[in-house]
Length: 212
Image 1 (cartoon, rainbow, N blue to C red):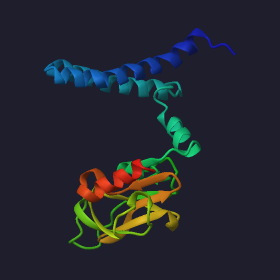
Image 2 (spheres, rainbow, N blue to C red):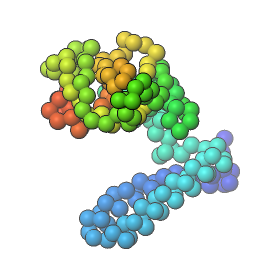
Image 3 (cartoon, rainbow, N blue to C red):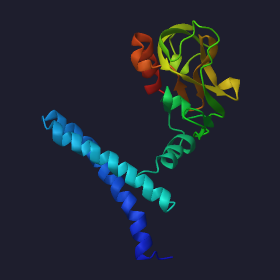
Image 4 (tube, rainbow, N blue to C red):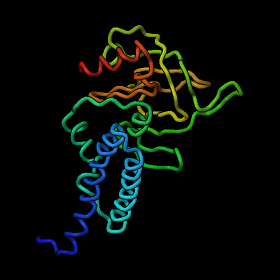
């Protein structure tokens, strides 16, 4: 069925805005590297405004932009084509069914479970959990290939993912309570800690993932 001109405008404006926003990113970096700080600032502000306008149009007319519809594209590549995926910290939280940060919100539901704030059971347990903590690895191989069962990784978070299935847990950690430090199921991997901040052990995790 052929769309009317009015419908065509509604569908194309969000796409054009998304394209403009994508162009703003490398342009901002280029301007900063060339000393055009003020110009870069206004390009950055324009990108933020375009994001708000894009969201308003999508909500007002119940639309999804082709360039901005990243969820479907991500599911196609990871869930259906089974390409390796590594979620780090918030990237791990997004995999859950439901999140509770700033109110309840839906996740990708790739890992059935809920994301909740760390519960303090003593005055010694501080939230957010920041710093180095011992991690007990429960699954051999994968992103932990070549590593000992007990490793130290760097954390920076206030929320944790509690999956429905215990068999997806590949490592645990304790900060007041025991929580899931990483998960692994098929081609999907995720860590609550930051491997990129965890020196040799963290670099080994990233290197192992790149070899999968």
